[in-house]
Image (cartoon, rainbow, N blue to C red; front, side):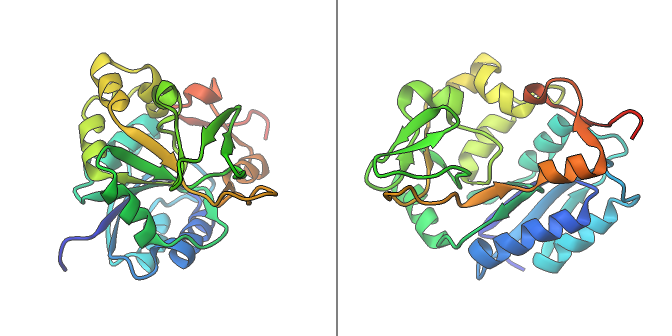
Length: 251
């Protein structure tokens, strides 16, 4: 079969319709013509009784699917499992509840990562892009002539998040070995062990987009929140430190 150009790491739950919506959009707007392999963990969360249904959906879009179907749900374990099995030079991290809204040329993203040796990743933004900055949450990422770049002082706080991103495999392998599989992984990139923070701080981080006035529209949107409300699931405890889902009481 040959070595895949791209490992697509997917943390998922038992919601096959949502996974099909996610993968359909990324297949249409980004992955077309790219030799990809899916690495997916399906946690037993949701109203579908069989995690394998999600794997079946993945097999509609990928020639090769490596999967894990644990008996207990854990987002940190799911994240570490998929990242620890990525071997390609480039990895696309994709949670199961994002929809891509418009085309992005994959080779252009790849070219930017290759041409900037210490650029760890390029994120597909869920935010509008202006002429000089992209507002990301309550911060502003400046346009550097090729992409919107996370300022050096904010690399640890804003460099990595779970939004869809094309990432160098070297970054994935260098950081995943330090992850604690009992703690929210995204938080560890910001407040994790010294070795992980040192690794994060030495890389650059970017978001793609087109400078525009009025601002250009986001490239991806979260489609998981509506599903959660409609199906009475919520993130247990603090959303910021999320590790598992729970069914809302009385619903």
